[in-house]
Each structure stands twice: as C-alpha cells, then as structure tokens.
Image: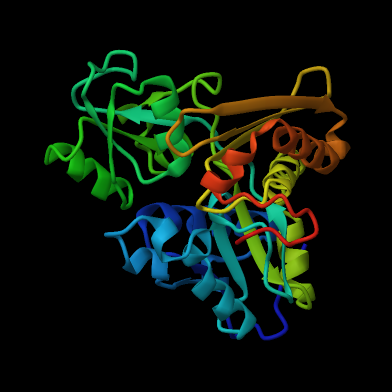
Length: 326
C-alpha cells in the first residue's frame, strides 16, 4: 500500500475526457485507488482534456482519423508530464500505444453487451420495415444491415445525452448504446440489453484501462493494486484478435472473450462488410493464459476465409508484416 507520494503537496493527476461517462469512469478509478491505498480524495485531481473526437461531432470518425481521436491529446499530456494517469474506455483504444506509455491495469469489466434504446419499439425485431436506426458505429451498422437490411441507418454521433435528445427530436426511431456506459451513469433502465448472440460487441467494450508512463514506479505501484486479472485476460485475447485483423475505425470488427465456468476462456470474433452483405464468425476455446495466441489464431482463420473483395472494401491489410492501423 502506498501512503504518500514523492511530493505529498502535489495531487496525482488523472486525465480523462469531459463527457459524463468519461468523468464517471475517472471517479470510479479515483475511488478504487483511494480505497486500495487508504488515501484521501484530495490526494488526486481529475484533469479534463478535450480531444479532437469530442470537438468534431458532425462527421463520421473514419473521415477524421479514427479511434485515436479520442486518446491522442490525453496521451500527449501523459507523455509531457501534465498528468500522471489516463483513464480510457478500452474500446476506443488503438491497438498500438505511443512509445513510453503502457496499459497494464484494467478495472473490473462492466456488462459488455450493446443496448437497444427507443421511445417507440422494444427491440430490433419489433421495428417495422423502413424504420430509422441512428448509429455512427461501423460495426453496429454492419451488424444491423446484415440482420435487418429493410431498416434505414442514419448517422448518429454524440454522447449518451446527445443521442437521447436526437431520439426525442425524431432524428431516428432507435439507437444503440453500450450497456456498460448506461450502467455507470445509472441509466440502464432506459435500454434493453441485446444478447451477444444477436449482436457481438466491440472489442473490449465495457472495460476501463488505466494508462501510465512506463518509467513511473509510483504510478505503477498505485494501479497494480486495483487491476482486475479476469478483465486483463479477456481484453488481452480480444485486442490480440483486433491486432491480427489490422483493426481500425474503418473496419467492422466484433469480439468477446468470456471466462467459462469450467475455467476455460472462450473467444468469439466477427468481421463484416460495411453494408452487412457478408458476415464471417469464428471462435476459440482454451486456457485463459493463452488468450493472445487464441486471438491471433482466430484472426488468421477469419482472414483466410474472407474473399479478396472483402479486404478492398473494409481496408483490412493482409500484409502480416505491417503494424496494425490505429
């Protein structure tokens, strides 16, 4: 247990985005660190950092640079010493991190499922042909069009509150959110969870990662006390799948690793064409410590099964010697 910092007059600074959900995640991180190390609240300071992804909300992410738009400024602040820890939704994290930074702490994972939210209908199945579903996620759009090509999909970006306002304004008849985010905001009651057999979630959805400088021993000792092994094993397998598929924000990819009651790890993965016309799925089961190898192996299988046109339309690279996109 750490009871003091090298400089007790300076609070440890936790960097985060400024949305209600991001702040809830930062507060959870602070609360867990306080409890683990018997530290007072004033030993920490939450620092809000506005990212490019937060500033530009009128265009799809793929048009302005992808997932890194929600992390780049925060990671720059971490590298520059302006903050000591960064709290991230792991589904937003590129597969590669900047030199000098590491994520080796994951808080206990929340519900990874997607959520169906509508003022008019109770489920996807209840929606009539031609109904409008708002989503900016290529994965959710592709999965929906694969299952219900008779529905309309409209662009729908913004935080939870913004998306709910758009529903009220009639921009769409329904939308999707993450159950994890709704639970952390005490809003789970507004949505219906979608089973993972119907809509496989995003890689690492529901997981919070804490990023630090690799050469900061105080931060390393602090976060080690709150890291959840089960979440680390699951996220490690899923992100290995993502890395093997060269996953980016331009690629509809889904994946979920689950620890089974028998002590094994089950990993499911899925890749789709953006228009939903083709969906390829696979799974692996093995020992929890073999998750990264399972992810890489499943990625290879999905790539082998995909026709050549798939790679042209999704932007997935088949050059296994090149680094994954971020």
